[in-house]
Length: 97
Picture (cartoon, rainbow, N blue to C red):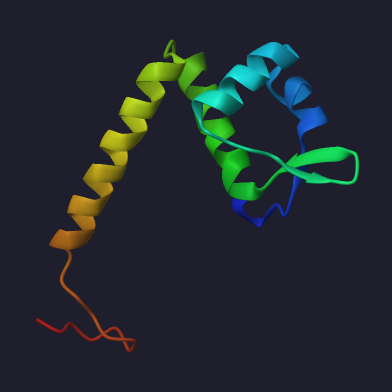
């Protein structure tokens, strides 16, 4: 859903997550997100917004900033391993094994 968002104003993020600006900037730093600046406004893109949403959900479950990075890296590794285990198919959907 968020991947289709072209840009989301950073100024709207504290209200989205019901947090203070300082907490938002801590999250941006932890995720290594650098908003883009257009004119006098800053924005995050859809992928960055999804990362922030995922982090917010993680914190809501009792997680923290540091263990979110570890958890997301583990999930990424698991996804890569699962992808490698899938049999290759061609563009027509025919199994190439």
